[in-house]
Image 1 (cartoon, rainbow, N blue to C red):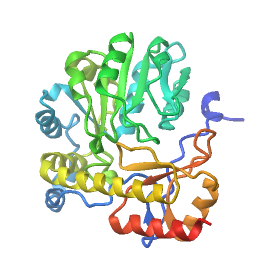
Image 2: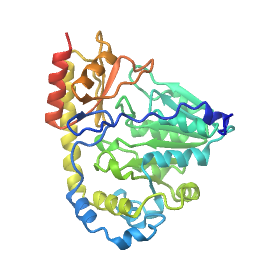
Image 3: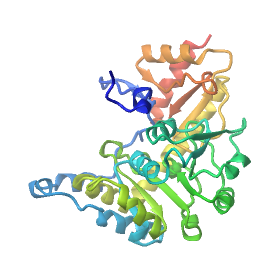
Image 4: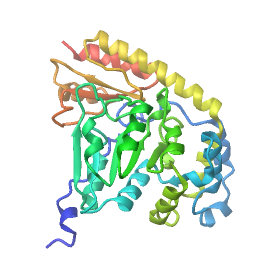
Length: 347
Protein backbone atom coordinates (compact mmCIF):
# COMPACT_ATOMS: atom_id res chain seq x y z
CA UNK A 1 0.00 0.00 0.00
CA UNK A 2 1.21 3.48 -0.83
CA UNK A 3 0.49 6.51 1.32
CA UNK A 4 1.18 8.89 -1.53
CA UNK A 5 -1.22 10.51 -3.95
CA UNK A 6 -1.32 8.66 -7.28
CA UNK A 7 0.55 11.40 -9.13
CA UNK A 8 3.35 11.32 -6.55
CA UNK A 9 3.56 7.53 -6.55
CA UNK A 10 4.05 7.42 -10.33
CA UNK A 11 6.25 10.52 -10.57
CA UNK A 12 9.83 9.98 -11.71
CA UNK A 13 11.00 13.22 -10.07
CA UNK A 14 13.57 15.74 -11.21
CA UNK A 15 17.10 14.40 -11.62
CA UNK A 16 19.75 17.02 -10.77
CA UNK A 17 23.15 16.98 -12.44
CA UNK A 18 25.71 14.66 -10.86
CA UNK A 19 27.69 16.22 -8.02
CA UNK A 20 31.09 14.50 -7.75
CA UNK A 21 32.49 14.30 -4.22
CA UNK A 22 36.16 14.54 -5.15
CA UNK A 23 37.70 17.96 -5.75
CA UNK A 24 40.22 17.02 -8.46
CA UNK A 25 37.67 17.00 -11.29
CA UNK A 26 36.68 19.28 -14.15
CA UNK A 27 33.02 19.94 -13.44
CA UNK A 28 31.20 21.22 -16.52
CA UNK A 29 27.81 19.60 -16.00
CA UNK A 30 25.63 21.89 -13.87
CA UNK A 31 26.30 25.37 -15.29
CA UNK A 32 28.04 26.85 -12.28
CA UNK A 33 30.14 29.94 -12.79
CA UNK A 34 33.83 28.90 -12.80
CA UNK A 35 34.86 32.08 -10.96
CA UNK A 36 34.39 32.97 -7.27
CA UNK A 37 31.76 35.47 -6.13
CA UNK A 38 32.53 39.12 -5.56
CA UNK A 39 35.06 39.89 -2.78
CA UNK A 40 32.30 42.04 -1.28
CA UNK A 41 30.31 38.84 -0.70
CA UNK A 42 33.17 37.30 1.26
CA UNK A 43 33.52 40.44 3.37
CA UNK A 44 29.85 40.28 4.32
CA UNK A 45 30.12 36.56 5.02
CA UNK A 46 33.00 37.16 7.45
CA UNK A 47 30.81 39.60 9.39
CA UNK A 48 27.79 37.31 9.88
CA UNK A 49 27.05 37.36 13.61
CA UNK A 50 25.61 34.88 16.07
CA UNK A 51 22.72 37.29 16.61
CA UNK A 52 21.82 37.14 12.91
CA UNK A 53 21.79 33.35 13.08
CA UNK A 54 19.68 33.29 16.25
CA UNK A 55 16.83 35.33 14.81
CA UNK A 56 14.41 34.65 11.98
CA UNK A 57 15.27 36.48 8.73
CA UNK A 58 13.33 39.32 7.17
CA UNK A 59 10.39 37.38 5.66
CA UNK A 60 10.49 39.37 2.40
CA UNK A 61 14.21 40.28 2.22
CA UNK A 62 13.70 44.04 1.88
CA UNK A 63 17.45 44.77 1.81
CA UNK A 64 17.82 42.71 -1.36
CA UNK A 65 14.52 43.92 -2.85
CA UNK A 66 15.69 47.51 -2.62
CA UNK A 67 19.08 46.75 -4.19
CA UNK A 68 17.54 44.76 -7.05
CA UNK A 69 14.86 47.37 -7.65
CA UNK A 70 17.49 50.11 -7.91
CA UNK A 71 19.44 48.05 -10.44
CA UNK A 72 16.38 47.40 -12.63
CA UNK A 73 14.80 50.84 -12.37
CA UNK A 74 11.75 49.50 -10.51
CA UNK A 75 10.34 49.61 -6.98
CA UNK A 76 10.83 47.05 -4.19
CA UNK A 77 7.17 46.09 -4.66
CA UNK A 78 8.20 44.66 -8.05
CA UNK A 79 10.68 42.18 -6.52
CA UNK A 80 10.16 38.93 -4.60
CA UNK A 81 13.06 37.00 -3.08
CA UNK A 82 13.13 33.24 -3.65
CA UNK A 83 15.09 30.21 -2.50
CA UNK A 84 16.67 29.85 -5.93
CA UNK A 85 14.83 30.15 -9.22
CA UNK A 86 13.24 26.73 -8.64
CA UNK A 87 11.41 28.17 -5.64
CA UNK A 88 9.76 30.75 -7.89
CA UNK A 89 8.77 28.05 -10.36
CA UNK A 90 7.22 26.01 -7.55
CA UNK A 91 5.35 29.09 -6.29
CA UNK A 92 4.08 29.89 -9.79
CA UNK A 93 2.77 26.37 -10.39
CA UNK A 94 1.02 26.39 -7.01
CA UNK A 95 -0.44 29.83 -7.70
CA UNK A 96 -1.69 29.35 -11.25
CA UNK A 97 -2.01 25.65 -12.13
CA UNK A 98 -4.26 22.71 -11.22
CA UNK A 99 -6.17 19.98 -13.04
CA UNK A 100 -8.37 22.62 -14.71
CA UNK A 101 -5.59 25.16 -15.39
CA UNK A 102 -2.84 23.81 -17.67
CA UNK A 103 0.72 24.96 -18.25
CA UNK A 104 2.31 25.39 -21.69
CA UNK A 105 5.95 25.61 -22.73
CA UNK A 106 8.12 24.83 -25.75
CA UNK A 107 10.32 21.71 -25.68
CA UNK A 108 13.03 20.64 -25.19
CA UNK A 109 13.58 22.89 -22.18
CA UNK A 110 14.22 22.79 -18.43
CA UNK A 111 13.12 19.36 -17.25
CA UNK A 112 11.75 20.59 -13.91
CA UNK A 113 8.67 22.12 -15.56
CA UNK A 114 6.83 18.82 -16.19
CA UNK A 115 7.72 17.56 -12.70
CA UNK A 116 6.09 20.60 -11.09
CA UNK A 117 3.08 20.26 -13.38
CA UNK A 118 2.53 16.66 -12.31
CA UNK A 119 2.77 17.66 -8.65
CA UNK A 120 -0.16 20.02 -9.27
CA UNK A 121 -2.10 17.48 -11.38
CA UNK A 122 -1.93 20.09 -14.14
CA UNK A 123 -2.09 19.20 -17.82
CA UNK A 124 1.07 19.98 -19.80
CA UNK A 125 0.89 21.46 -23.27
CA UNK A 126 4.31 20.86 -24.77
CA UNK A 127 4.94 22.61 -28.10
CA UNK A 128 8.06 21.44 -29.95
CA UNK A 129 10.68 23.97 -31.00
CA UNK A 130 11.79 23.80 -34.62
CA UNK A 131 15.38 22.83 -35.43
CA UNK A 132 16.55 26.42 -34.85
CA UNK A 133 14.67 26.85 -31.54
CA UNK A 134 12.39 29.59 -32.80
CA UNK A 135 9.37 30.52 -30.67
CA UNK A 136 6.51 28.19 -31.73
CA UNK A 137 3.51 30.23 -32.96
CA UNK A 138 1.12 27.68 -31.40
CA UNK A 139 2.30 28.71 -27.94
CA UNK A 140 0.05 31.77 -28.12
CA UNK A 141 -3.09 29.69 -28.79
CA UNK A 142 -3.04 27.13 -25.96
CA UNK A 143 -5.24 29.08 -23.49
CA UNK A 144 -2.98 27.85 -20.68
CA UNK A 145 -3.14 29.49 -17.27
CA UNK A 146 0.65 29.63 -17.20
CA UNK A 147 3.02 29.79 -20.16
CA UNK A 148 6.76 29.42 -19.53
CA UNK A 149 9.56 30.38 -21.89
CA UNK A 150 13.10 29.67 -20.74
CA UNK A 151 15.16 32.47 -22.30
CA UNK A 152 18.01 31.83 -22.93
CA UNK A 153 16.69 28.32 -23.24
CA UNK A 154 18.20 25.35 -21.46
CA UNK A 155 19.70 23.18 -22.83
CA UNK A 156 20.00 24.89 -26.23
CA UNK A 157 21.34 28.31 -25.20
CA UNK A 158 19.08 29.91 -27.82
CA UNK A 159 17.53 33.34 -27.28
CA UNK A 160 14.12 34.66 -28.30
CA UNK A 161 13.95 38.41 -28.90
CA UNK A 162 12.26 40.83 -26.52
CA UNK A 163 9.90 41.87 -29.31
CA UNK A 164 8.69 38.33 -29.90
CA UNK A 165 8.08 37.80 -26.19
CA UNK A 166 6.21 41.12 -25.99
CA UNK A 167 3.93 39.93 -28.78
CA UNK A 168 3.39 36.63 -26.97
CA UNK A 169 2.54 38.39 -23.69
CA UNK A 170 0.04 40.57 -25.53
CA UNK A 171 -1.72 37.55 -27.06
CA UNK A 172 -1.93 35.43 -23.90
CA UNK A 173 -4.92 35.45 -21.58
CA UNK A 174 -2.86 33.83 -18.82
CA UNK A 175 0.50 34.53 -17.18
CA UNK A 176 3.79 34.49 -19.09
CA UNK A 177 6.75 33.46 -16.94
CA UNK A 178 10.05 34.18 -18.68
CA UNK A 179 12.76 32.07 -17.06
CA UNK A 180 15.85 34.28 -17.33
CA UNK A 181 18.13 32.12 -15.17
CA UNK A 182 20.88 32.44 -17.81
CA UNK A 183 20.22 35.96 -19.05
CA UNK A 184 23.37 37.33 -17.39
CA UNK A 185 25.30 35.88 -20.34
CA UNK A 186 23.00 37.28 -23.06
CA UNK A 187 23.02 40.71 -24.69
CA UNK A 188 19.40 41.59 -23.91
CA UNK A 189 16.75 40.88 -21.30
CA UNK A 190 13.03 41.39 -20.75
CA UNK A 191 12.91 43.76 -17.76
CA UNK A 192 11.17 46.40 -19.90
CA UNK A 193 8.22 44.04 -20.43
CA UNK A 194 7.36 44.15 -16.73
CA UNK A 195 6.52 47.85 -17.08
CA UNK A 196 4.23 47.24 -20.07
CA UNK A 197 2.45 43.96 -19.20
CA UNK A 198 0.57 42.97 -16.04
CA UNK A 199 0.82 39.26 -16.92
CA UNK A 200 4.63 38.93 -17.16
CA UNK A 201 6.88 37.44 -14.46
CA UNK A 202 10.64 37.29 -14.87
CA UNK A 203 12.73 34.69 -13.07
CA UNK A 204 16.27 35.70 -12.13
CA UNK A 205 18.97 33.59 -10.52
CA UNK A 206 22.00 34.55 -8.42
CA UNK A 207 23.54 31.11 -9.10
CA UNK A 208 24.99 31.72 -12.56
CA UNK A 209 26.30 35.23 -13.20
CA UNK A 210 26.88 35.99 -9.53
CA UNK A 211 28.57 32.66 -8.58
CA UNK A 212 26.23 32.00 -5.66
CA UNK A 213 24.80 28.58 -6.54
CA UNK A 214 25.47 27.24 -3.02
CA UNK A 215 23.26 29.74 -1.19
CA UNK A 216 20.15 29.12 -3.36
CA UNK A 217 18.91 32.61 -4.10
CA UNK A 218 16.78 33.90 -6.95
CA UNK A 219 14.10 36.51 -7.40
CA UNK A 220 10.96 37.40 -9.31
CA UNK A 221 10.34 40.64 -11.18
CA UNK A 222 6.75 41.58 -11.97
CA UNK A 223 4.10 44.24 -11.50
CA UNK A 224 3.11 44.83 -7.89
CA UNK A 225 -0.23 42.98 -8.04
CA UNK A 226 1.42 39.81 -9.33
CA UNK A 227 4.15 40.01 -6.69
CA UNK A 228 1.54 40.49 -3.97
CA UNK A 229 -0.30 37.38 -5.12
CA UNK A 230 2.87 35.30 -5.28
CA UNK A 231 3.76 36.45 -1.75
CA UNK A 232 0.63 34.66 -0.51
CA UNK A 233 1.98 31.36 -1.81
CA UNK A 234 5.63 31.47 -0.76
CA UNK A 235 6.87 29.89 2.47
CA UNK A 236 6.86 32.15 5.53
CA UNK A 237 10.65 32.54 5.54
CA UNK A 238 11.67 31.22 2.14
CA UNK A 239 15.13 32.84 2.09
CA UNK A 240 17.56 32.85 5.01
CA UNK A 241 19.38 35.81 6.56
CA UNK A 242 22.83 34.76 5.31
CA UNK A 243 21.56 34.35 1.74
CA UNK A 244 19.84 37.75 1.80
CA UNK A 245 23.02 39.47 2.99
CA UNK A 246 25.31 37.74 0.49
CA UNK A 247 22.96 38.17 -2.48
CA UNK A 248 22.60 41.87 -1.67
CA UNK A 249 26.38 42.34 -1.57
CA UNK A 250 26.73 40.51 -4.90
CA UNK A 251 24.06 42.43 -6.79
CA UNK A 252 25.49 45.75 -5.60
CA UNK A 253 28.93 44.95 -7.06
CA UNK A 254 28.03 45.36 -10.72
CA UNK A 255 31.62 46.12 -11.80
CA UNK A 256 32.79 42.69 -10.64
CA UNK A 257 29.67 41.04 -12.10
CA UNK A 258 30.23 42.56 -15.54
CA UNK A 259 33.92 41.65 -15.52
CA UNK A 260 33.29 38.00 -14.75
CA UNK A 261 30.33 37.52 -17.09
CA UNK A 262 32.34 39.05 -19.94
CA UNK A 263 35.15 36.58 -19.22
CA UNK A 264 32.68 33.70 -19.41
CA UNK A 265 31.24 35.01 -22.69
CA UNK A 266 34.70 35.26 -24.25
CA UNK A 267 35.57 31.75 -23.08
CA UNK A 268 32.24 30.52 -24.49
CA UNK A 269 33.03 31.80 -27.98
CA UNK A 270 36.49 30.23 -27.86
CA UNK A 271 35.05 26.91 -26.69
CA UNK A 272 32.47 26.90 -29.50
CA UNK A 273 35.20 27.51 -32.07
CA UNK A 274 37.39 24.71 -30.71
CA UNK A 275 34.48 22.24 -30.62
CA UNK A 276 33.58 23.11 -34.21
CA UNK A 277 37.20 22.47 -35.19
CA UNK A 278 36.67 18.94 -33.83
CA UNK A 279 33.63 18.60 -36.15
CA UNK A 280 31.00 19.01 -33.46
CA UNK A 281 27.91 20.92 -34.56
CA UNK A 282 27.57 23.76 -32.03
CA UNK A 283 25.02 26.56 -32.47
CA UNK A 284 25.56 30.00 -30.98
CA UNK A 285 24.83 30.21 -27.26
CA UNK A 286 23.54 33.05 -25.10
CA UNK A 287 24.13 31.20 -21.83
CA UNK A 288 27.14 29.91 -19.87
CA UNK A 289 26.98 26.55 -21.62
CA UNK A 290 26.97 25.15 -25.14
CA UNK A 291 25.00 22.31 -26.70
CA UNK A 292 27.29 20.22 -28.89
CA UNK A 293 25.91 17.71 -31.38
CA UNK A 294 28.34 14.82 -31.62
CA UNK A 295 27.50 13.67 -35.16
CA UNK A 296 28.81 10.20 -35.97
CA UNK A 297 30.17 9.66 -32.46
CA UNK A 298 27.67 8.39 -29.86
CA UNK A 299 27.21 11.12 -27.28
CA UNK A 300 26.76 8.62 -24.44
CA UNK A 301 30.10 6.98 -25.21
CA UNK A 302 31.92 10.32 -25.31
CA UNK A 303 30.28 11.18 -22.00
CA UNK A 304 31.49 7.93 -20.43
CA UNK A 305 35.03 8.44 -21.72
CA UNK A 306 35.11 11.94 -20.27
CA UNK A 307 33.93 10.63 -16.90
CA UNK A 308 36.84 8.16 -16.91
CA UNK A 309 39.11 11.19 -17.20
CA UNK A 310 37.32 12.98 -14.32
CA UNK A 311 35.66 15.44 -16.70
CA UNK A 312 31.92 15.82 -16.19
CA UNK A 313 29.52 17.25 -18.79
CA UNK A 314 25.75 16.69 -19.08
CA UNK A 315 24.17 13.95 -21.19
CA UNK A 316 20.38 13.73 -21.56
CA UNK A 317 19.02 10.35 -22.64
CA UNK A 318 16.05 11.93 -24.42
CA UNK A 319 14.98 11.52 -28.07
CA UNK A 320 15.75 15.13 -29.10
CA UNK A 321 18.99 15.33 -27.12
CA UNK A 322 20.53 11.84 -27.24
CA UNK A 323 23.10 12.89 -29.86
CA UNK A 324 24.21 15.97 -27.91
CA UNK A 325 26.26 16.98 -24.89
CA UNK A 326 25.62 20.10 -22.83
CA UNK A 327 28.93 21.57 -21.72
CA UNK A 328 29.28 24.32 -19.12
CA UNK A 329 31.80 27.01 -19.99
CA UNK A 330 34.72 26.67 -17.58
CA UNK A 331 37.94 28.58 -17.12
CA UNK A 332 40.35 28.72 -20.03
CA UNK A 333 42.40 25.97 -18.39
CA UNK A 334 39.37 23.74 -17.83
CA UNK A 335 38.16 24.22 -21.40
CA UNK A 336 41.63 23.38 -22.76
CA UNK A 337 41.72 20.15 -20.75
CA UNK A 338 38.30 19.23 -22.10
CA UNK A 339 39.42 19.81 -25.69
CA UNK A 340 42.60 17.77 -25.15
CA UNK A 341 40.52 14.92 -23.73
CA UNK A 342 38.14 15.02 -26.69
CA UNK A 343 41.08 14.84 -29.08
CA UNK A 344 42.20 11.67 -27.28
CA UNK A 345 38.71 10.15 -27.35
CA UNK A 346 37.64 10.90 -30.92
CA UNK A 347 38.92 8.56 -33.64
